[in-house]
Image 1 (spheres, helix red, strand yellow):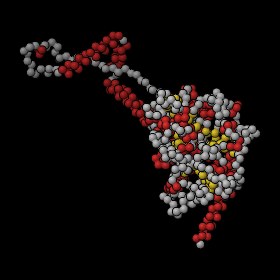
Image 2: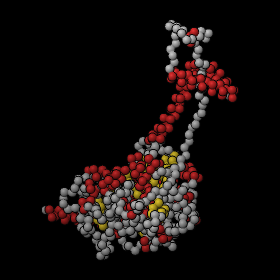
Image 3: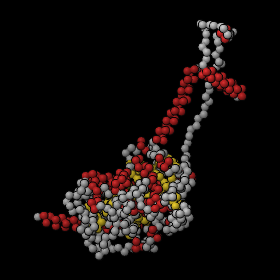
Image 4: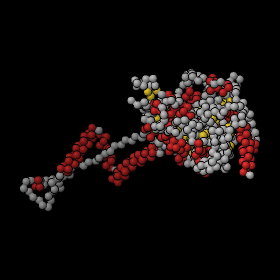
Length: 603
């Protein structure tokens, strides 16, 4: 038996309202016709011949039809004797003029046909019906979304996918054991995210993927709180089965919790042609309309530059990425470089207790918040993290609803991970100077590599070399990802070393490609942004523009990483913002020196 992941047998649960109409169809029969002269029997006598009034001998078909009519007439009379009310109905119908009876019959059948056509039209207008079939199953359509096309014709169509592993916390990772994760985490975060997206003129539909069966009353909670005209589909009990790794020979199965993180890819594949943008995140990640809209606008600007870019760089210099002390960090970029560029994000938490769990990063680097024409600027916590949770969190999980500049912390990266790149002439303020995030590296063609001015280029970290692209403590996995339809098509068909969307025929590893890949590979950022045998090597960037930098910060509302990890991993987000500005100024100075030296050599 092949080593493959088996989907759980699941049942479809649908709540559809049908209009049933009943009516009584009457066929009014008359007695069998007789001859004009019932006393004239001569035509039936042997030897009698009447050429003028002779009737044709009836065929067998005529006899059968006549017999059926006689049978139906007798049955109708029998029912009239049993139910006297039927005779009154017949008499009433016979009193109605024939033309009116005909009109009534046409109307009766006409509205039924019209109703069937309307139902068929509404069914075909759904974004896709194949998902209900391909997952066989546990998907509940709670609210139609076909009204969007008429109401928001110019809005960006967004499919927001939320994945939830547990309905109640198990006490691990510094959570409160037995606390209602659905009620106090998933529901308020998802509703706030959707409301924020809708307020930014985004046309949103939601797919919720749950590892557990979702009770009807909880489905009702979601439906009641979602904004009007937001489509909702629920795929519950979504854990697939796989062979047990220690008992493969016996064929024993287990529920594969790791595989849940991959299920959203099937949803994206099924819905790909119906949406402009896909937003797929874990259930504790707060996603705001500012951030989704910013990703969309930034992606459009990147695409504009890609279309204008040359196929290759003619100067022969290349970006020379492997030699980080001499890497090119400004100037023309090729199509093969720009097609891998996507906006990126960093997760942040709100510091709950600055006394007991303050940020004490060991990495020292100067910070500068003077942004020239923009003046002195700091991050804006209101974009990502001003959040009123309803229902409120448990007492042990209380956090500020309106955190200040110094209350946001980062734990998955620091200044060592970043480089600065000036994008080609003609870039908008969104991209003019951008931060290159870590990730790409292995198996990335040289012509597609993008050079940047690394923060340690001038020896800020002594003899320490630039870290590799996939360093777990620096890669800043996002707890999810965003992508436009065009980006996904390009990635899946051209850029990724293995499939990003199913079928996962080229994904290496057992269990249908699930082993040895973890949750972060599928739902975090590793396959999307890093380089290896099954990865995509996409280059995330962050705008250093002070008007836009804060839109790259995503709120991890669980706020539990600060309790799990050492304080030395914690870095204030505003501190990193100032440090990146310092790197930008160092890069601008280095660029002037390089251009001056180059002009001197030419002369």
